[in-house]
Image (cartoon, rainbow, N blue to C red; front, side, top):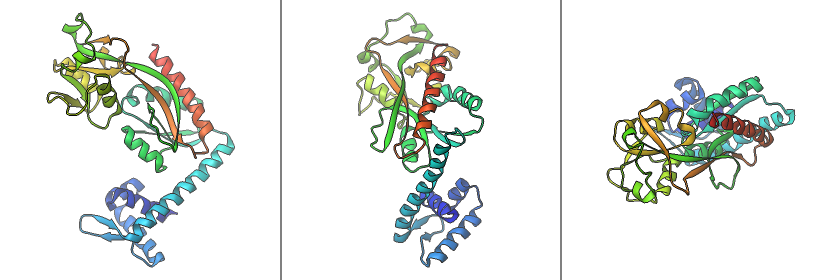
Length: 295
């Protein structure tokens, strides 16, 4: 099983160094384990080059089957945890970047208070990466914007929140622009890959080709600071306002109805035996978010 996990990491990363780092062992030790696995099989799984590796035809098929075996083994452990009915062990949970900074700290503290035997392993990444890691069994559950429309995943809606407009302090008294007016302004957006970017573009009825002067940032904090510097305007979710907009020299305004909004929810694999526990955790996250958003 240990060698299968090492080979699975190598197949995913395509690099001995990165695979070894993900497995918390040295690169030479990983190389030895892969060679021993090949010796047991009597066949070559990996073509070793000076700077990169490539799986052989057998290696490709072996990687797929090894991953399925490892996922089944992990689910056996989850099945045992589910039968015990206790919140304990490791919880690998993902968060999109427009949620994690604002709700994860309080959620983690609440879980630590209620379930001291539960070891939280949070992961922040864009939706596409979280979905991939869920499918591959590297995450147990995730908090994302819904819907994701993945047949293999269960979705549990938790709460909705509106977007607000952030602009310069000197514009605080100006009329709030409608979507058509926003299209003519210098709109600051998150870089490609963020679902919040797509939601903002949808509200403004903007699609490719995008305006040349449209500017991008890697985080909501960066966007708000760019607005503070007078570079443009942006949209942020309500949960980010106390953390970003109130500490910057900017003004915040509600957009005209129908206001843009998003639905936040928890997702997990339908085959995961810990589904009942995830529903309990989802309710705790909902309660935590409700308290924080009402402050």
